Image (cartoon, rainbow, N blue to C red; front, side, top):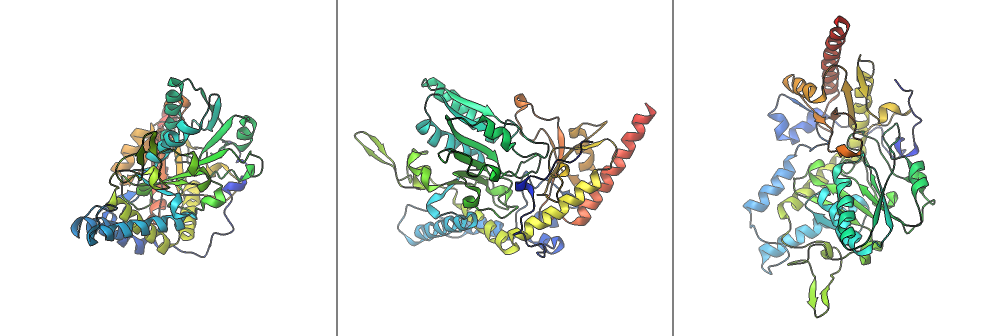
Length: 434
């Protein structure tokens, strides 16, 4: 096994984290009705989280009580929902350390990144410009740039996509990024918390070393509901979140657009409710965030997001972060000594006590998919496969990913480790017989 890599600055536990904050999973599980009805241990929260009662109530309330279209009618039912959506936008802004006009509601994180590519990229990029990205990130953080590259090529503009490496501890390699930045670099795309490696990248090592004109785009799909998040501290120009990964509903997301980029954005969904107006010379863009929105919004989903943020704030994001850190360390230390088990890059390979609720591994003698089936039969629900990392970009072998949240207990992790230990021992004996 490789010796652990030094703990990078961005992976070290923040001094701001309150280690006295306590999450009590047994008490919180009552908030999540799906778990109350299930005997299985749910360990796939990086794929989607369970939904708390206030979120379910928010969705139900909209469809049962005075359903109307927000942002259009002048009668009380409609204006009431318009005010509620405005409040959710303001709450989302406060959650991220942003202003309300910097918050765009989207159908999800994938849609948000595609909105950046199309609204910003098509208008702002010139022939020969460059975007730096990691081919080992989620496909939704890779394919939008490749699609943008192909689209620009049709108009005679060449876009260079420059890949950068990932370190042994699963972070973006900031030294490699710095070495590959040129005078034509326009944007650096980063996974804030990697969906497979469970490693945090903030780019803080590059503060003051990059041209301030280079934009930073963070995929915060995994970090949004797990750790305190401030887009100002990140230095983000764009950031996306997925509501369903932070207790919210599917089909809802958030795109943060820093105010300094607003004039670089063209209308993304021109149409009704987008604020765009027509003229003899074409469409005149609206102010933000209407410039990036159009059509009837996912009203129920946005209301559910507001309820989800309230739940997260009530529990305390520092408490959530500390709970997941403790479970991650417990999981790593339990799995590390097992025969034939290899931990993928991430906190397991760093000399620090970091952990963000995601651990991926392989086990010799059995494929990840088969292992996932066995674990499911034994009552443990995990994600298996390549986890949406593009195969052509040198994706790792299929792996098992374990991901936790506030409803995961230390006992859940202990039982899971014992189960994997039994399987590892049986597979080791089989190898010895051969």
